[in-house]
Length: 66
Image (cartoon, rainbow, N blue to C red; front, top):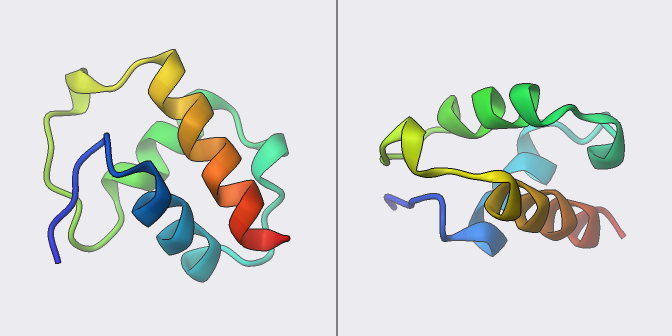
């Protein structure tokens, strides 16, 4: 399955699967941006993300962990 920046819930799920040991609130946005781009199936322009999207991804990831 292919996904983009706006698929925040899918990204949150995949990040929780790929990095179960990481606290999402401790990840800097620069690192989060890289981690999302490295996920298998991610296909979007790196420049299309912004702080609002990264915050939403971080919260979706946190929800997946809880």
